[in-house]
Length: 161
Length: 173
Image (cartoon, rainbow over all chains, first blue to last red; front, side, top):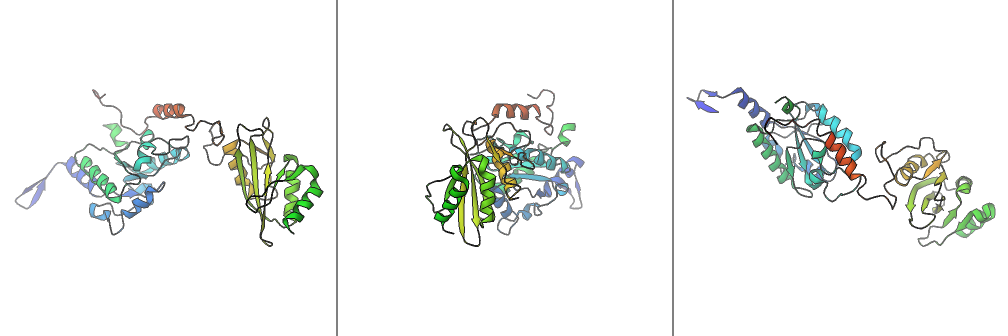
């Protein structure tokens, strides 16, 4: 964006839309396991994701932009998480929070999906068991960065590209 | 009623279908033949054990009989507990259901059926409760592979990969 005479901005619509998208990423309340305890801290006063426009955890997928998969995904949960993901309006993003969501973690067994990228398109992976809220904030910043650069297109919309 | 009195009463009433076992943790326990289970459980309810705490399964593979279904009962008025152990035969792991006497047995027996494959005859709705409904096998059996049908699952995920992922662009590898 460029400032001209301090009066108005000149930009492209594309950039403007991406700026709007990245500036208020509302996460979905979707806690699967112990990582969710760390995720709850995000909106508390200490870490305060509101500073980055992510202050409201939406309880309904219809109002959320970002799914933070916090915890291990069991096989029985797969149809549920897919339905919830499909219910989110586009554009939408996914953060795999923690070792279990990223790779199955310590649960190398029959019941756990070995990484949510098997069933959902993941934009950012956060390592840690569990990751600190700082790490998740960092992931949100990374996501904002890649949205601004047009790399993270966000869900099904990317199929049209 | 003292534990000894309960043992005497059970043995007198059911003969060799009930055998007292060692009681390491102060809960009297008995081995019960599957065919006598409903009668014994009904009798226990009559003498005050009004609560069925849990139904558990154990796989003692490679011992035979390998399966054991364990029942815990609680007598709230007299503050006493009792445990029943029931070993169905290996070739036909079937145990009569107690769901008609204690509705609490319904989900617990479904769990044992789901994870061990022990069939509870007379159960109103013996379906899987923890694993997906189309799952094959019973995961808590000792001879079940820890990782389950991993290759099959990975192939399924790869085949569906991915209804939500973006298609590859021209020139993209």
